[in-house]
Image: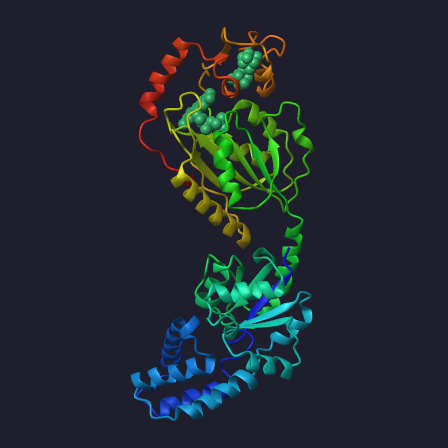
Amino acid sequence: MIKAIFLDYTGTILREDCWQMKEVQRRVCAASTCRDEDHLLARFHAHLKDWEAQSVGATYRDADEVVTCTFRSLGEEISMTEDIPSLMKLMRSFWADGAFFPDVAPFFALCSLPIYVISNNGEGYVARAMAKHGLNPAGLVCADHVRAYKPARSLFERALEVSGCRPEEVLHVGDSYDSDVTGARSAGIRPILLQRKGGPARADVTTISSLTHLIPLLKEERKHDSMKYYKILFSPTGGTKKAADILMHSLCREAVQVDLMDREADFGAIPFAAEDVCLVAVPSFGGRVPVPAAQRLAKMEGNGARVILMTVYGNRHYDDTLVELEDLLSQAGFRPVAGVAALAEHSMDRRFAQGRPDAADQAELEAFGRTIRQRLEAGEYPAPALPGNRPYKDMPPLLSKPLATEDCGQCGQCAEVCPVGAIDPENAANTNADLCASCMACTTVCANGRQVPAPIMEKLSAMLEKVCQGRKENELF
Ligand SMILES: Cc1cc2nc3c(=O)[nH]c(=O)nc-3n(C[C@H](O)[C@H](O)[C@H](O)COP(=O)(O)O)c2cc1C
Ligand code: SF4
Ligand code: SF4
């Protein structure tokens, strides 16, 4: 839940085109080799950023000193003869008495959340200007407080401390991508870029053209507060779950878990809502969605919930699994927003994709999660372009049907985990081969007591050896 707004000062609240800055530009241009005011402004900012970057901790200079140094180094570059103290007088007047943008007062009036001003400028100037305009921010956090300038993370962390908020409870709004967006992100805060005059389109950040546009955005956020994440898994031997957990962890902290292995659950009764985000992850069996998972997904009512489609496979291929998943879930009323194909050990023969998902997979799946999160934040979901064919390939006959061995002690555990009730709980030797989905869940809970008969396993292994070679890569669609 968003509990506070952080707001940049210069360029966001304070107009940089006010008379003091115009007078500075006029005087510098008149007394230097630079005649172009736009070029002058660009060079001023370049020198300013250099001095700010050098000014940290023991070498910290306050904003007056940094801007004085800026005029000095810029002055050398353009042979400026203008008197620096008189320029600094104008700068101080700009910081403390400059004009505010016309949307600032309406925003303060309309925003019901506390607003903290986060500025590279001296606290005295900012406080005086805010008071002069009759605006009462909940707090001011300035570079002097942490002896570092934006985009320093410490400035944003101090603001979190002062506001008592966690990073995910705050939005930082500012007009500079390099200072505001980069700085806020470094502290885990979601940035909003203010571009009043337009500017380069940025796909990776929410952009607004007026501060008052934040008000509907905050209303939208409040709706999202009731949003739930769901992790919906069919994972007989745990590989699908491993990969899905990594992806989900980079999307949200908590998710409601739905276990598609559960043969008793009423999947039609889950109250999905349009603002929810679901991850549906299934293994690829013969390049298709496993039948019990497909049957259970078809019973759900998505009610417009957004869904990330994920298939996990064992280093052969997933063929039509993603398109089948897309069709199943679209028909069930979900909105697909992304597709992921990931790797995990082959559950029939663990020599293939051995050790996966590994550290490299983890980094890649986390990056996928961040990209998906940005898509969700941007609120734009073009249908993902998923590989696969319609009509789907025929499901090949699944030959790997495990049976009880002579080591079976009749404990009943395999019958409990079987997603289709193919094993007699009273006698594990009785297995209904027609029901068995070859999922390997029973062999995972009991490696000695249940096995695929050796001659069949040998054939399958030889076949897999031909088609599971090389390292296949995770994919995001
Ligand atoms: C019956 C069956 C069929 C499978 N078919 C494929 C396949 O077509 N392509 C592939 O790459 N892996 C295939 N696999 C491997 C699984 O997709 C992979 O091991 C997956 O991670 C298993 O998920 P789990 O660990 O959650 O059970 C198959 C596994 C089983 C048991
Ligand atoms: S096969 Fe294994 S899990 Fe199943 S009943 Fe026998 S001992 Fe228990
Ligand atoms: S009997 Fe078949 S369906 Fe049941 S757990 Fe074993 S492999 Fe899976």
